[in-house]
Amino acid sequence: MNRRTFGVMAFAFAVTIPWIAIWTAANVLPMLGEFLPVLGTEPLVTPEDFSTGTVVAVSGLSVLGASFLLAWGAETAEKDVPRAFAIAVLAILAVAPEYAVDALYAFNAGAFVGTDRGVEAGNLAVANMTGANRILIGIGWSGIAVFSIVRYYVGGPDPAIEERDGFLANVVTLDRDLSLEIVFLFAATVWAFMVPLNDAIDVLDMLILVGIYVAYILIVLRGPIDPEEEHVGVPAYLQQFPRPKRVATVLFLFAYSGLMIFTAVEPFAHGLEDVGKNIGVPAFFMIQWVAPLASESPELIVVVYLVNKARTTAGFNALISSKLNQWTLLIGTLVVVYSIGLGRYGALPFDATQSAEIWLTAAQSMFALSILVNFEISIREAAVLLVLFCSQVLLEFMIIRDLIVSPVTKYESLLIFTGIYIVLAVVLFAVRRRALRSLLDRTAGVIRAAVSTADEHPGSAD
Image (tube, rainbow, N blue to C red; front, top):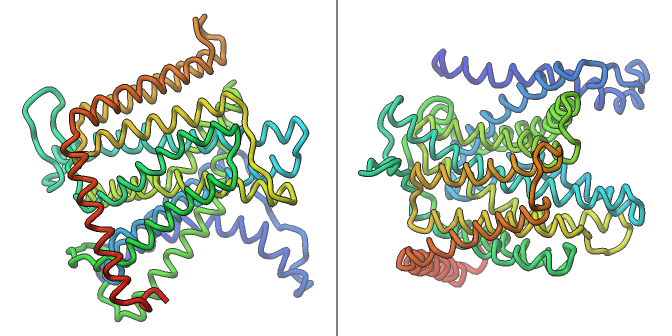
C-alpha cells in the first residue's frame, strides 16, 4: 500500500471516529453497563449535550467518511459480482437513512391512529418520501449531468461525454446495459400513478412495488460478472487481496459504512431541521425537503466520487438504482411499518395534497425516463429538470409563507406541474418512439437470457 492510499483510507475512517465516540457513549455503554456495573447504565454523553452546529458538523463528517468507504466497497465488489448488483447494494445502503426517517413517521401514523398526531405523521411519511424521490431526480440526476460535463472540461477526458453542436447540446452518454433499470423504473412509475386512487398505500401496492424490485434483483444476479475494469487508488489495492480476504473486506466496508450512515444521518437531518426552524422555515417544508436532502447526501457524495474518477456511467447507474429502490421498496414497505405501529394490518392513509404530491413525483419520474430513453442526457435537458424542480419548490414555499398572492392553491399548483411533466414526457416519448422500442427489445433480451440461465442452472440461486 502506498502512502497516498493509506492516507485517504485513514482520513475516511478518522472523520467517523468522533461520531462513533458520541454514539457509543450514548447507546452502547449503557447496555454494557447492565453486565459490567462499573460502566453504569446512564449515557455518558448524548447528541443533545452538544450544540446543534456541533452535531451537524460531527454527524455530517461521519456521513462523508462513510460515503467514501461505501463507494470503495462497491468498486472492490465488482471483481466478484455483477456491477449492477454491487451498485444496487450500494444504493440501498446509501439511502438507508431515508428509509429510517420515513419509517419513523409511518410507525407513528399507526401508533397514534385516530389522533391529529397520527394524521400528521401519515402525511409526513408520504411528504418525506415524495420529497426524497423528487430531490434525487431534480437535483441528483440534473446536477450530476452538469457536474460530469464541467469535470470533462476542467479535469480531462471522460468516455461518457460527447460534444454536440448547438446550445447546451453536449451530452452524458449512458451504458446501454442500464436498459433493465430504466424499464423496471418505468413499470414502478406507471403503478405509482395508481397509488393515490385509493387515498392510501395498501398491501396491493406493497406486493406490486416490492415485487418489481425483487424481480429486478433476481435478473441482475443472473447476469454475468462484468469484464474487469482498471481501478486506481483504494479499490485497486483492495482488489489485490485473495478472494476470501477481499470478500470479508467488502462486507466489513458495507457493514461499517452502513452503520455510520444509518446512525448519523438522522441527527444530521434533524440538526438541519432545527437550523431551518430557527430562521423561520415551516416544519412541514423542512421535513419534506431539507431532511430528505440531508438523508440523500451519502448517495450524492458517492456519485460525485465516481464521476470525479471519470466513471460517469457507474455514477448514473447508482442514481438510477437509488431511484428504483426508493420508488419501490420505500413506498411498498411503508404499509408494513404502519401496520406494525397499528398492531394489525392497515393501509397508510394520506390527504388529497399528498395524493397530488405522489402524482407530481410520478410525473417527474416519467419525464426523466423519457429523457434517458435514448441513453443520454444533455446539459439542456438537465437544466429543464433542475429549473422545473426548483421553480415548483420555490413556488410552494412562497405560497405557504404567504410571500405572494397566488391565483392557485398549493394543491392546484401541484396538479399544474404534474400536467407540465406529463405533457413533456408524452412529447419526448413520441419523438423518441424508435429509441423506446429498442430499449424495450433490449430489456426483453436481458430478461430472456436471465430466465434461460435459471432454467439451465435451477439450483444456482440456492
